[in-house]
Image 1 (tube, helix red, strand yellow):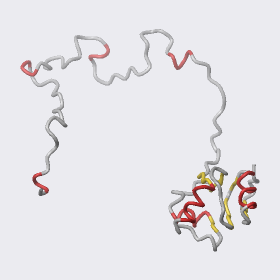
Image 2 (tube, one colour):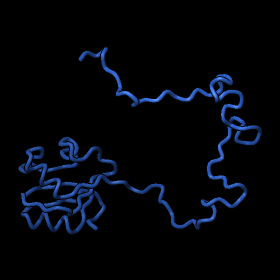
Image 3 (cartoon, rainbow, N blue to C red):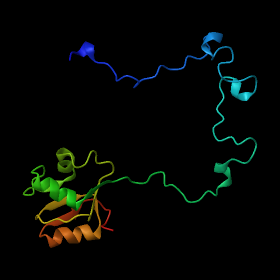
Image 4 (cartoon, one colour):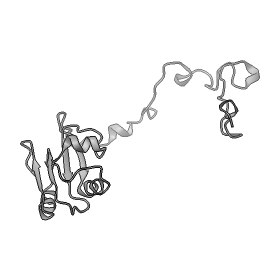
Length: 157
């Protein structure tokens, strides 16, 4: 097979419906929009309009508050850290920092910091330095003989 011989499977693609191309096309003149009315005009965005009835999004109660300056952490589980150590993608001998986690590919980007959670189990003695950690994660690392240091003012929750 050569590049110029590549084809889609039969019936895999359909030709788009060409609207407003004369009466023979079956979609000429009004182009499937009917006659007159709001929807026949251009620039119409009806969206959540319900024919004059109070729209659903207005009928439902508004609750809560979204903090505009909230911090977003990249989340890592201990089980994944252990897996990366076993696969030799992380060096357990050296201190594992947030930059090391990003370099290994375990975390895509740091965001406002990396937070370690306790899902999975850790058996290797490691030194972790991260922005945040759960209490159970700190205990699990200590139980394995390692240390987990929370670097910023954010205490372990």
